[in-house]
Length: 214
Length: 136
Image (cartoon, rainbow over all chains, first blue to last red; front, side, top):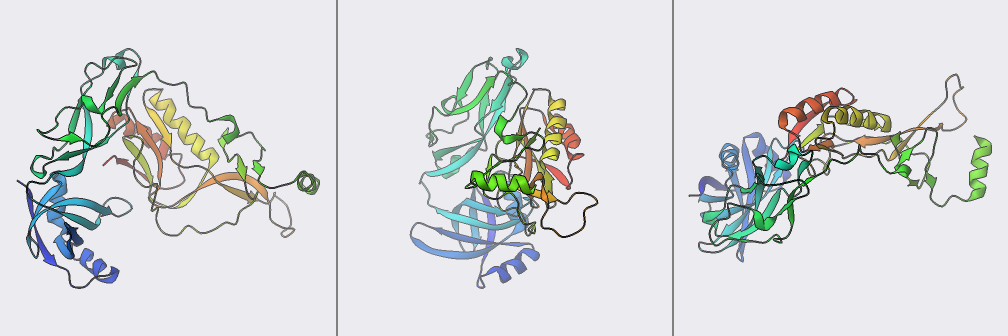
């Protein structure tokens, strides 16, 4: 069951009015898709935050617009504390949609005990599924991940019935590797004391001139 | 040894002003945890290196540390006891220009508790106020 959000129609558009809305604890949003005209909406920030806290990706709209919508894009402020704007994509019952789902690892890799490091390379995957069956997360069991072993998208658990991966199935998700030697940045990027980088387009004469001035 | 560019177009740059917040490079991309700047400022190459050493001494090869900033800006200075004038000084050090919200470092492969301690050690080295953030 999708979370319900009460929405109002937004008559005044533009940053001045949107800023006023945000001060009042409301969030500007836009609803589009399926060839229909876009609709400017207002939604309460607290309801939206609760929806995000519950990891919902599809919401049931109520009020100025109805039907289901996918939370297509959420704009946050620089410090990811306030929601600035929400894009909603209309969803028709029975249609399959492409969503991004987070990937979490579960368990302890035996490779860690052998001196390896478990590194998660891919943190989210795209899947195509029905809106009613969007999973909260996909799990990667790493209980059998030995040193130098890798796990791929196809090894993910928790896929809903009838869903398929949009991300290539042979993409690396997590691997257990040997710790690298202390990271030393390539020689040229490290400046020895008093060293100066090469100046693009500077001739040898100019260099000599500079040296004599210095 | 500190970071510096390989090639530059000009040896010296104007000071510039730090206006607004970071509109890019402000999210955790590579690791699980990040150290985000809350203020704008210049972070010298030596400071970036000091932070890297402080963090790596704590994690000791367990996790992976990512440095998200690079000192592109040359900072000039005039030698001590020199009369004013006679042109701009000579390049003294290199610095990264940081805007509020910039992600400075990221860490992966460690627990949240370990990342917290690691970033606390690192934060002591920074000339700007910072906070730890988790991947969304």
